[in-house]
Amino acid sequence: MRRRMKSGSQVRITSSGVAFFLLLAYVVSLLVYLAVLAHSRLPSPISLVASLGPSPYGVSLGPVSLGYLSIVLVALLGVASWPRKLRDRHLPSRSVAASAVLVGMLIGSVFSIASSVPVVHTAQDSEQGFTLAVDYGATTVSLGQNFTAQYVLTDNSYSLTTPSYFFGGQFSMVFNNSAGKQVVAFRSHIDFSTPNGPQYVQLQPGEVWRATLGWNGTVYPSNGTSYAVPPGSYKLISYAVIQDGNASLYVFLHPSDISVTFT
Image 1 (cartoon, helix red, strand yellow):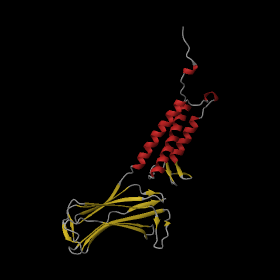
Image 2 (cartoon, rainbow, N blue to C red):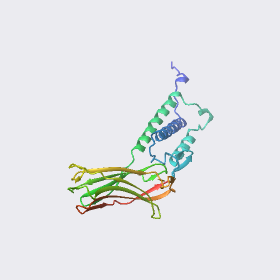
Image 3 (cartoon, helix red, strand yellow):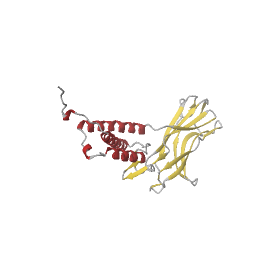
Image 4 (cartoon, rainbow, N blue to C red):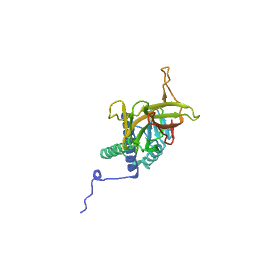
């Protein structure tokens, strides 16, 4: 004699149920991703998914932008999750909803981790036993967010001990607009070791000096006001200078220029 299973113990998995699960998971992942970006003030390179502020790769929704990829996925999953027949219309169980939320949180965390680890590019130049490397990430940023570059100067083979008179060095970050006019410049002094007291400077192979410089598109004139530059493409010109009049040392390092776009 066969026993009939109770209707409450039957498990039905429909195509619309799977689509609804994926839709809910994706929406939760977007919310987690945007929340982490806003809280940690991280850049948002995955603009096709979602980003903070306006984006050329999505639709602005106030303080955030929903990427074109997300719009297409949400639309497709929304259509697929709609039941084809009225008899298929049912609310998902609590376990299904909870699983979708957990999956969404996991996906959102992966998005956030990917945003916090940007791809690093390098431009460099070598001259007279020195190498200047400029490390940078995404070259398209929103106005108000920093484009940041790390300047790394390495002494490969130059040795020198000289009085500090007429001796100096600096990193320079200079931005020009599309017309070639200088918009803003930042500089950082290169501090060399002085093992024999403040009157002497020493350079030895293997020494490394670093400085991190950045710009968010804001200009501060001498009158105390400030303004944001227009969106567009700007050219970053980077260089390092080491000069010593006592030893006729003059090193000028100029890596390749970098095109930066502010949106």
